[in-house]
Image (cartoon, rainbow, N blue to C red; front, side):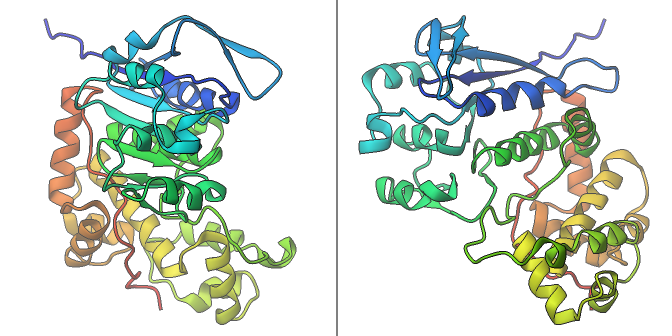
Length: 348
């Protein structure tokens, strides 16, 4: 009889002063991820530096049943934000108690931070020489405190394989959905997003904060153009067609689109087309030429160019890797979808 794959265990580390909303994100997202038979793909547990009540930044405490020994059993450790990190935030060093807790983490465990939880990973040395992000308001202080970290203050999240970080609040949702997508593919991630009633995908490279004032809402939105585009990804798209949906000039539309998304229309379209190609590669046996046409890249050569740039592997390798990972059960992982931005090609 075939043995049942071992479920992937996520352990969330609850620290004093934690934000309840962010503590709940891993439980909400990973807890809603199911396989096609409706079976959970992750087990989510919470631990503290000691069992017992953990004070939050609200007017209530969280009762935590497990101590730090639980970290030794984790496949993924998540550190949410806290406003009371003490020497971690003030001096860039771990307290003795926190250092002893993190020592339980096994080598090779995937590490994830949400918002200022990244300070903990940085103080422990996990982020040295790696890309990372945190809430935009803390980014400058974070970089000064941890000069060895490659801080990107403008993105929603970073993925460096076994270490991932996110900006504040909603970006933690984006990162957890990204991890589900990386582990189990777009279909599972999209269904998880539907269950949670959140957008299924915001790319990590999307801007988390725009310093200059935003235009008035009734003038700024490019939502109608995006919705129009999503039904036509397989067609050649011109910037003038998109601008027409919002009754704007091409110049105004391009400026406002970048203000809202942090990327150009062409870059955004490529991201959506890569996502469509991923779905087709994961869920169908269509030949590459057909995948290229249906996702809007036109030719297999163009498909290979853009998928390689975004995912770091060829379409054929991605399909093969995904099938192999799916066959190994919930502990398998996929190539990260976050890569360098590229021009859209078919957008004129």
